[in-house]
Image 1 (spheres, one colour):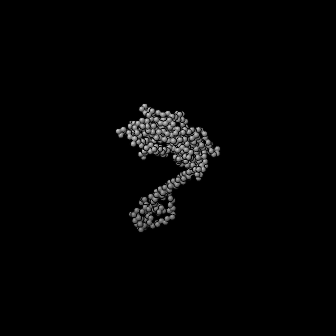
Image 2 (image 1 turned 90 degrees about the horizontal axis):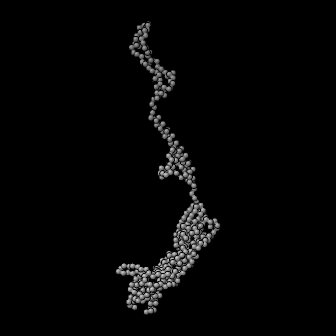
Image 3 (image 1 turned 30 degrees about the vertical axis):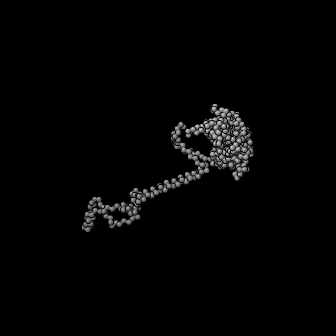
Length: 436
């Protein structure tokens, strides 16, 4: 029976260690492969300044001024009474060796080994087990500096018969059935050095920037800057590169490791990598930036078009501006100027064409009407026309007493007086013929 208990105990410890370590962050030298956190593409103009953001608040270095109170372990008990779960803090202990038991009833009855943070054994010992000790116990490990949190749960049942005493794994947690009045030890073992040793954090934190020109693989990247939490700084490469790339001196106190590049050039293109290594906490992160440099755009001209006789604008007023700003690129100014000349010429030609069309239509409406004024101005030569004298009759405005020599002449005279002479305006007839 005793050999079986020891075998089960060893098996339980082995299972617990297998479950605990996967949740721990390895911090040994073999874990040199960084985890890629982000990949960002950035584009900037030549001659400008660029900042590659690389921030991590887990890398903020704070010197331990509280006697190493950043590592703590505490045990909690969860009971199920009448389908009601309640929790109770049993005890806790800091890495400085201080151990505290919260209940007066449990003082001297429950405790953890004093060398817990040296050998990694955080098991809880309970003396004189009673029925009220039944429940689910949780062993909680917290590393506030490295932001690591681990929990191990164990279920404790109390029995009155020796035959029912046993330990087993139910698939989620260890289950221990203890005899009432006996002493039981709830196992919680984590021998990861982050919980057992205390290294000098200043020598364990380092940040470095790498640069890969286009076409160069990662393993052949050029180192730019190394920065340690102790304040040591190393810059690599030619002097002009070291002068144009910089990281703030308060990087580890603020968690801001951004790289500032001034006076960008086309030769600065490539892949930049920010590597964050915290060997004490097992933190290894990498942020990648793809940087492209483009030529700056040509300068622009601002043309102010103002209204004539416009009232002065009120500087306090937010509306009513009478100025229109038209921004035209310098390379297109000549094109718009020539286009303006062409449009103005075309508009003038259209106006002249419209004027000619209107005058022509007006002349057509008048047709071939007779214009008396134009006809009067023309000189008519009557000699150019022949006149038939047979159709003309003499005109007499008053009676004339003639002395006729014979009767025949007298009769002809009387006959001519009976029919008045026809009044013919030769000038009018000639003008009509001439105007035609």
